[in-house]
Length: 275
Figure (spheres, rainbow, N blue to C red):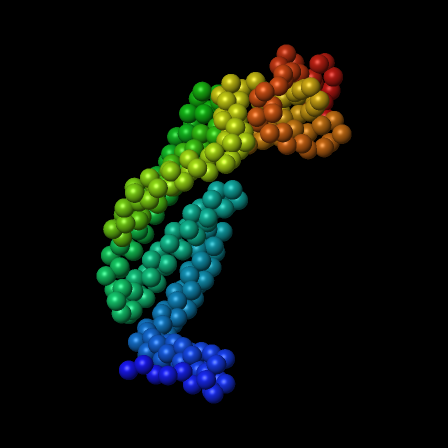
């Protein structure tokens, strides 16, 4: 049976009755959710506080032990950084499993969380070994700094992508269809960002062709300076006036570049002392 609108009711005409009804309904839902998840939320906050205190105390003990046992500052800093990451991951995993165990409806995720933790450790260890291998090969083949940086960046992107795929797989999520969709989106974005892609491709070309290296003095049609950095988008030079300039790689790759340091010591372009 349809209720006839009350045209004499100002509250009805202004929509206040409907608004009060929506607010009352949401308030009832919030109270029901609080009754269901409130105790679990309170316990989760207590668990988080306990593990945070445990982390603070354990970290302080770890720093004290490493300061006593390791005298080399560089080695001590490296060991402390590694142990701190390991401690964070371990306690975060334990806290997450503890919270999942007391939260209704999501207790089945404890197993995947444990596997993700072990996968994190495997990825960190594997990345350290891979980076050591890449640096060693770069020194063996006498690659310059820019090309070594390119290899490390590409390897890092591939390693992170593999890690993200494996982590999502632990929860039963297949990223291949999503990556396929992102590929189509990336193609559309590529047409809209042709300058960025042109600079990117030009940067890779210069890193492989190596017309100059970091520290070399170069001269173009309207600029002269010392190369201080080479990224996949820009080339950074420092002029004789101590000004830092970022030149798009596309512009630099399409112009005539004179390497003033090619036939002499670095810092002495054309027989003159550099900056």
